[in-house]
Image (tube, rainbow, N blue to C red; front, side, top):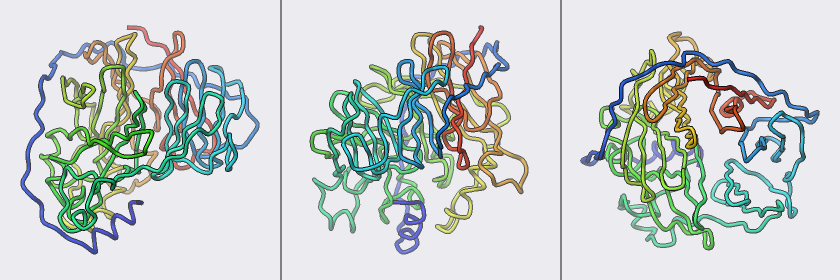
Length: 384
């Protein structure tokens, strides 16, 4: 469901905000800063490719850079130096083709693409294995979902379409979720920010969403409805999940059951977090661009376990009240070593660390750019 469709639903229906509860945090690490990195020397990877590329993003898998072209619907592979390797998956309905996709992840030599509620699974030979429709309503009563939605009813939720991320492990898919149900949603109900889950656990064999997982941190209770910042970013490790929320300076470490075990983090430099809060449904559309282009919020997170490093990007906010372009909100990146902040540096817009090859850390510069028609990847080294 698109943002516009949600907006229409919320105008047609209305509801009051129920009582709230606060998420508890087991432990918060308050380590002093030790800023030793104040700038990065970025090198831009030069890609040897003569074909057309559209809006997309880059993933790092082993020693390959994978460009996911969401305009022409194809996967283009390069080596770490930008040399073209091939196009293993293209657009279409054939065995090594996909009609359309929005989100991607990989696991155990398999590739997973999602378009809306449809999941496409490809094997190590890049041939389509399964096409599965996610099922949120298999255990729900449709009448109850419409007239009396309950927070623990899987049927009131759906795939989170904006800023979603997928993860596959142990035969299950994890996808971010949200609710646009008129009786329980992120625009009109304060209870949503206290009790609504973050992820749906999906049985890959059946497509059924079998469990709801995760909760938002207590910082959301400081605001009166900020759905424009109801986004969160994760990095799944073998036994831990690192997760960061747009308005929250803390980074949370979750166990495999999505329970908070620890939190750490520092506030970004010069962030304007005077968010425009919602008091009417109409504010949902009116304030979106102002909040996203003129305010400070935290974004992508990447953990490099072997180096005990965590990278997190954030925007500071643009003081120009007449600036409404997504690429004009200045961006910075925090660098944590052993949970201690050791660096806070300026980075280009649309910058997100995607992994490490050898001595170099790689960052995508394409994701979120609405106008990109090129592959943008940076690499850098760290001395600390």
